[in-house]
Image (cartoon, rainbow, N blue to C red; front, side, top):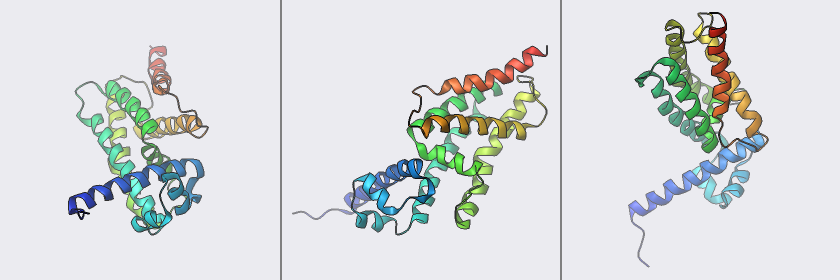
Length: 208
């Protein structure tokens, strides 16, 4: 039997890590932070020893899981500052893309959810690692986009983009979470975007 090459071993490593993280995000959605490495191994249809080889404890696994979610979310958030259309259109596209990404990649939803809970129940190392990055990469760009929308009078709201960002993210997380945690995530969650943004624009129109 021909020995595996370094490239083949690396390919197996990448495949296994993805398999473990995919299982971990499903287990986390179902059980919260109380899950065990054995739960992940069972979900991934892998032996406990195999999972333990890559992740010797749950905190290391959570760090990789949240890092994956943060990285994917940061790519989405870039659209808020680089899109050519106006801030309201950028915001609409961002919310829709975010909701669809949450549906297919729960780890992205989880990074928003745990940040909204101020990383409660997480070890201090995880909070220290991700809270600042969340603020810089995900939260501040949304505040900036909402600020531009207010300045352009595309939405009518008090001139406090940070409060508006909190309300928007809180509404998206809470509304989507109701579906997700009841295992009834909608095929087209963009109606949540329409519901929230119509309220902002509708308030503007009503005051004219």
